[in-house]
Amino acid sequence: MLGVAGANYVLNLVLARSLSAAEFGDANLAVNLVLIAAAAAATFQLLSARSGPTDERAGIDSRRRLTRCAWIIGGCAGAGMALGSSALADAFNTSTPWVFVVIGVGLPVYLAQAVARGALQGDLRLAHLALSYAAEAAVRVGIGVVMLALGYGAVGAAIAISLSFVASALVARHRAAAAGTGLAGSGSRADTESRVTAALSVAATVLLTAQVVIANGDVLLAKVLMAPEAAGDYAAAAVIGRGLYFLSWAVVHSTFPVVARAHSREQRRRAVHRALLMVGAIGVSGVAAMVGAGDRLAPVLLGDGYHDAAAVLVPYAIATALFAAANLIASVDLAVGRWHGAAALMTGAVVQTLLLVACGTTPMSMAVAQVVAMSFTALLVGAAHLWDNRTELRSFQPASVADELGEH
Image (cartoon, rainbow, N blue to C red):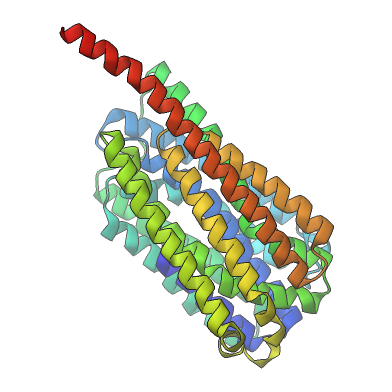
């Protein structure tokens, strides 16, 4: 996961140093489409990871259904992007519609392979999972640099991205098959388990949508609401600031299966606390780095044409750190079947969108609006988590008392 995030960073930095702010805005849009796809894929991956051991019939059948669902959703979304590419290009002020066409072609493959990745993640076969991410990262950066050198710009970046989808899918499917996951199995699960999976899928979809809106909505709205140069500056700041979020995703991915398979409340509590400490440390370190060296970091990483981006790095880092903490809590709550955290994150996404539309006319106003929205979101998700904990404790105590009375 960190390798792919690093690949996106390297590709963004190469694009930023090689293109003008307006051209970089177009190219960065292609990368943001990847981030949207990654959020969708992450939901399929987490559902697959939670589907149980890969050598049991229940897990095989669940992943078979998830794979079919991923192909259908990916195919519909990809076809929509390709057929509506001209309208999307006009809406986002891009110079060519081909970015949307190329990404749309690779999208179904990417969503389907996420189920295989989830099988590896759920069995804690992290070395095999890392190989899939490594293939995606290597192909994306390698072909992206070649395409940029050949003068293909944003379209070249999109081609590299779609080819990286194929590379990661090939590796993930091969490793999952070698692990005996049997993603093409047949049969049916019990009705009760099917209902639980359906309810979890709804909660995961809500969580996915919230993640997509919060993580990518600002850059997309900047393309709509700002001049091309200002949108490019904002996208450049986002390249640096989002590092905190992607680092935190590595914590989420490693914590989710541990929480889902914890045998006691105490094991789950310890796992969540460790993850919160790690995400908190990432956030505090990132904000401190932006405060101390943000004005020097932007020109070094992005080039001399992005001095204006440095001004929004600190508020952007604060907003991202708050989002990372809220996303962690909502995700681990989903691991144990809770949905209030996902609903709270979705509420925060709606609040952020409204604030950005109302106030996001400049890079600084958009960054400040995100700080306000993510502060509200973190508090709301935290309250939902505490409410679920209290409800669970109340339901647990009567059962414990009854057991004790039965013993006497």
